Image 1 (tube, helix red, strand yellow):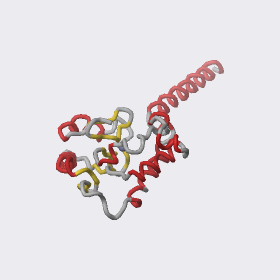
Image 2 (cartoon, rainbow, N blue to C red; image 1 turned 90 degrees about the vertical axis):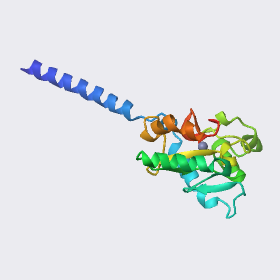
Image 3 (tube, rainbow, N blue to C red; image 1 turned 60 degrees about the vertical axis):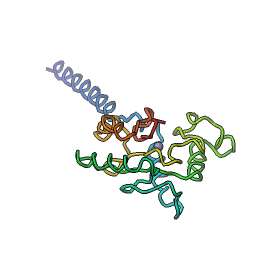
Image 4 (tube, protein in one colour; image 1 turned 180 degrees about the vertical axis):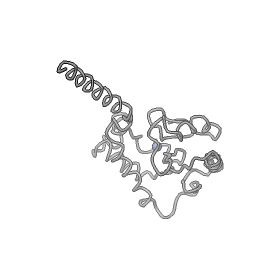
Length: 185
Ligand SMILES: [Zn+2]
């Protein structure tokens, strides 16, 4: 009796451990694992308040997203097509050079070297050098779905974009599920 009881406890313990491991691994988000996403997004979210009142002539606003006029129709159609398929997308497009410099200070360090020279991949999260971000030309969008940044390739919004965005001229930057631009960079 005692032996079978302790065997049951042993089995239970093993089940709990493996169940816990399974849940733990399933819930892990590859981007969240890097440890910077939430902080990063609160910073980017605050950008809208920092945008200058007057934007460059070649930047326009499409369904709430600021993009270059040359891709405005495509983005308009993409957002409408996504909505027709039941996906409400929004996001952040254009970013000023000053905002890019501010991001570099936060992600790469505060010396001139950190801000202007350090490789993007050495920053956390990776952040393009000022002057070289597609966002600064209104040619990249960080997409959100249901008000949250798309951080996983399992997201139905990512799956939809992976299938459809290319028709509207956007490609994904593989290291960032949320970042889509005219050339995938
Ligand atoms: Zn981006």
